[in-house]
Image (cartoon, rainbow, N blue to C red; front, top):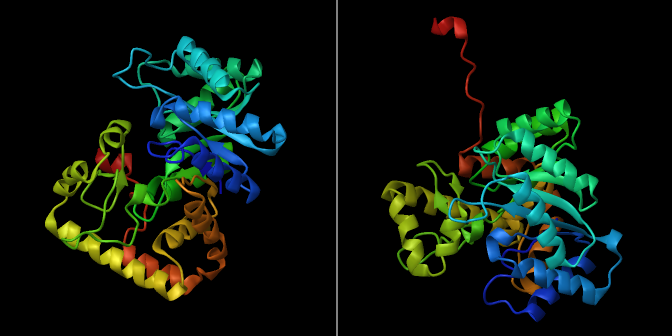
Length: 340
């Protein structure tokens, strides 16, 4: 259950507080730390690098993941060979490490040939700057395209995909990632088990679930977010636009789901966030679950979710399925003959 450091190195958390969280994680058996310039700037890599240097832990005892990120608003955009190599070397300098364990490409670049991307990542691995590489927020088709190019040009294949997975976002993680793992060995690193704070079990004065840093992609309970949205979502006032996207009926249904999930958590003697984390860990396809924490107490509470996993028996899981009513199913196969 690795540590995602977006909130750990975010605004309002001092370096000393962040170090306390990292130390507790390491001493509790967490050996993977995921950072990203996209989420909280170069500060995350710089501070994690300082902590690792001060602690002097054996390099083989922990794993560091960082991301190559691009967006249309930056001058350094795209996934060209130049941008990839410069980004990796800059991350190495900020982290003060001789190598990065896993370099993640955050979002695919439709304007860059996949061959250039995989050849650049192969070069990064061959130079010893990274041990492995993976992807984040890629579609299954894009992952397969990268894998096919790697096989065609004899390049290092991606080892993992970071995908959103929680009680209200299940399709990709449950339908497609197991297939990718079984066919080409791409593992699943799941992020946002708490829906960026949506799964809190708390409600505002209007009776609606407390929502933070999430956007709603459709009228069903499917939640996701983009970097621009999370950058701008810094106060309760900015969350109002999220609620405006939902129809009153959908808000009412979401409120009822939250309340019923709270009752299940109460029955199990745990908090709603702990139940949400344990539910994610129950899925055998999740090889790695990324969790963030702003304090040691918050991290400790999340770690206790491990003890809850055995309690999620068939009856409890059935109850949760009934409450959520969003079990993903594959669309029916349409015969091309029938379309003629």
